[in-house]
Every structure is written in structure tokens, then in C-alpha cells.
Length: 407
Ligand code: HEM
Image (cartoon, rainbow, N blue to C red; front, top):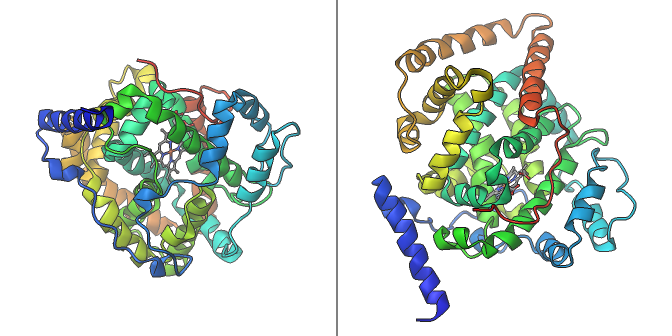
């Protein structure tokens, strides 16, 4: 048997074996057909190619070449000094990296500064919900997105989840700041560095035996995978806010969508795959997010690490059951059971009984003078505290990985 077919068999066996052990039906892993039309995208038109077969034609060869020629540590070191959107790039970067970043840092022609300004007000009023949802709905959902869970588990970052989460939390923080895409903000820098990190993962993970043995794809982080994860962020957040009956004017919800449309573009996602409206986003998510959610041994392990992050503070006695109950409350029983999160009588029932009234009171007080500002200050304090804990007081640098996780 040729090595390729053997590898495919191993992969099929490995994946099916793992699913069998979890008692999950194989179809949960199936990829749905791509029928979403580019006419519903911010580009308004496109070739309509299934983004499963599209990666990043600019960043991938560049980073592959940097890895091959051993320049990544030097580039990472220099890029530590690039922190603000409007800042000139550090001197000494290789010419190809400099040229790539100069192109990649340009905002799309369709950026709407008015919508970005409205999004600032939205973040100000709803920052607490956004923080909780990014962390516990989107973050925990990533562990039941099989391709993402495996990529994270077998990449370098999988060995130190606290560090990895601090970097992802930085993106969640930067996108919520008032100047996210302005010259003195940091979201463009964060998105472009993430784009480079993803390109590194595409080159490195296929060299990991552990990853190739279980992953159904040959190259990770396709544009389709990027959109799946994107939907675990703004689409899932908006679905939850609607389910909690948080009253959001159409103008605010369009602004929040825009914030994330720009993020998708800056992460290297082609405009023809970025939904132009919430109805298009929901239609795309119905097709590509909901059907792929499934447990994997890697995702279960990652979820356990995430829920145990508070153990340095309280040995996990209080934080773990609370985070577990929040996950169950946000994502439902099926996902919580997949992740083997035990039920907690006290916290499960407290959340069920009091989260609705808590939101109702917060919303009722919102029209009071200075309420949005007070909420923002309080929420900002919590966000900063979370980042400080996750980063252990160190500065957070998103970098191109130079290797995979050691086993
Ligand atoms: C790295 C965000 C999609 C797998 C990162 C980082 C961020 C990030 C901020 C830097 C953190 C770090 O260096 O550890 C995002 C966003 C996405 C997205 C916003 C979509 C909108 C995906 C997808 C996959 C993936 C779809 C896999 C299928 C990874 C991996 C790393 C990474 C493996 C590197 C971890 C490491 O070794 O350090 N991502 N990501 N990401 N991402 Fe993503």
C-alpha cells in the first residue's frame, strides 16, 4: 500500500475510533455542501468556490519561506515593537515581510467609519455580556469545532493554554476598544499578526505526526474553517443576545457586525466569504457551523484545561463548577455533556433563575444618566483584570510559531 493511502486509512481509523469511544455518530463529522452564494457577501460577487479549498495565497508562501530560511525568531522579535495600527514598521524587517504587512494593514475600501463609531457605543453598553459570551460561549464552542480543537491541541500553543488564551483574549479586548481600527488602536496589528501565526500553523502542522494521524484535512485553517470560527464569535454572540431578549437597535447590531466584517478581512478572509448582513451570516452559520459541532478527545482535553484556569486562585473548587455551569447555560446540555462537564445543582439552577433578571435590571438601568459610562468603567476593570491574570502580568505578543507541540 502506498504511504498516502496508508495515512488516509490511519486517519479514518483514528477518527472513527475516537468517535466510537465517545459514542458519537460519524455523520456529525461530515462537512456540509457549500451552497452559500457570494452575492450575499460584502464583495457582492465572487467565484463561489468552496472555501474549504482556499487558504491564504499571500501569507502562506511568505511564512513558509521565513520558516525555511530560519528568519522567524528575528521577525517575531522585531514585530514585538509594532503595537499600534498607525505606527511605522520596525526597521530591519526582511523586505518581503515589510511589503506584505504594508499591504495587509490597509483597511478594506468598504470600511464604514460611522458604523465603527456606533460599534464603540454598543461595546460600551454591552461590554459585560460581550466579555462573558466571547469567553464562555465562543471560547468553549471552539473546543467542539473538531478541526480547530485538533489544530490547537497539536500546535505549540496547545501545550500552554493559559498563554494561548491570553493571546486570543487580547484580540477580544482590542476589537472592543474605542480606537480598535484607528491609528492609535491595536486591532489591525493583532489581526495581521494572527494572520501570520495562522500561516505558520498551515506550514507546521502537516509536519506533526500526531496531527496528521487524526486530522481529515491535509492543510489546516482553510478559509471555510476561518469562517466557522468567525461564526462562533459574532454570530453566536448575537444569537445569544437575541435569545436573552437584550434589546438591540438594528443600527447597533449592524455596527457590531461591521466590526467583525472588518476583522475577517484583516485576518485574510476573502471578501466573497464575509456575510454582508445578519441574515446572510445566519444562513452561512446554519450551513457551516451548526453541522460540524462535535466532541473530540482533543476538544474534551482542551475544555477541561480551560475550565481549570482558575485553579491557581481557588484550587478549582469554586471557579471550575461556576465556569462549567456557565458553559452549560450558554451552550446547552448537549455540548456540556459532550465536554463531560458535570452538572452542578447549585450553579446550574442559580444561573437559570437569576441570569434573566440580572440582564433585565441592567437593561432597565441603562437609560439613566452616566449608566453606559459606569458600565464601561466596571466592565473595563474586569476585562483588564482577566487579561492581567491570563498574561501573568507579561506583555502579550502574538507570534509566528516555529514548531509544533512536543509529545
Ligand atoms: C492562533 C484567533 C481561526 C487555529 C491564533 C491567535 C489568535 C487567533 C488571536 C494567536 C494566538 C497564539 O498565537 O496562540 C483566531 C480567530 C479566528 C481563528 C479570530 C477566526 C475568526 C482559527 C481556526 C483554526 C485556528 C479556524 C484551526 C482550524 C489556530 C492555531 C493557532 C492560532 C493552531 C496557533 C497556536 C499556537 O501554536 O500558538 N488564532 N483564530 N484558528 N489559531 Fe486561530
